[in-house]
Image (cartoon, rainbow, N blue to C red; front, side):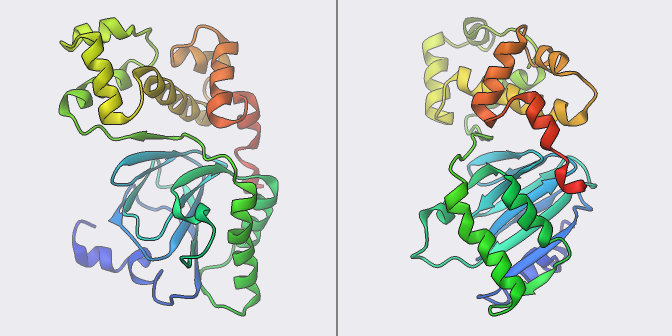
Length: 272
């Protein structure tokens, strides 16, 4: 799929924007481990089941766990990377006018509540253009209309991509040592920085502190481990560097809005 010709044949390049006023619907197994960088005029609502999907834009990598969706505004270049070809991907592509709610202009990841879940279930067998005036268009448009009302928490499930090559090496090291206790002073020393200069580098390049970055990265790893269902919550906490399960649970709640055990209960509802 490396050639531009092969890319041209893909539905998300060829078909999504053919009818400007339609809502385009596509539900299917991923079937591939990467959808290369592309963009479309319509905004995209992407919901996935059965695994984790990373969505990379020009500035960030978003982490899309089960029972959440990502909103990608029209015109935003992005690539999509599932952790398995068996991930089920549900897409609705919406036309958005310039005078609509500002919600539609921002990238974001949001939890799916029960109402949205039922509405998404209703679209299960739809594929292709839903034309204005049809019953299916009206239902899909209701999904779009309700989002600004119920999606009030844009979850911080994204990490900025480092631009500085020195920081890239540090982040690779952190990724390999998520279960270790890493002191900032030791990290600075290991990579030849003063604490002050490394602090500034994190803030300038990533727009966040080392603690913020490392905490989010640990919780993202914890979500991956929870979804694998091989470890208990206690074991997951230890695997990402938390000796205290209550501390892990509280941190998880701050980022995801629910406790690890509650998150696990809700991840496969759409499969029923």
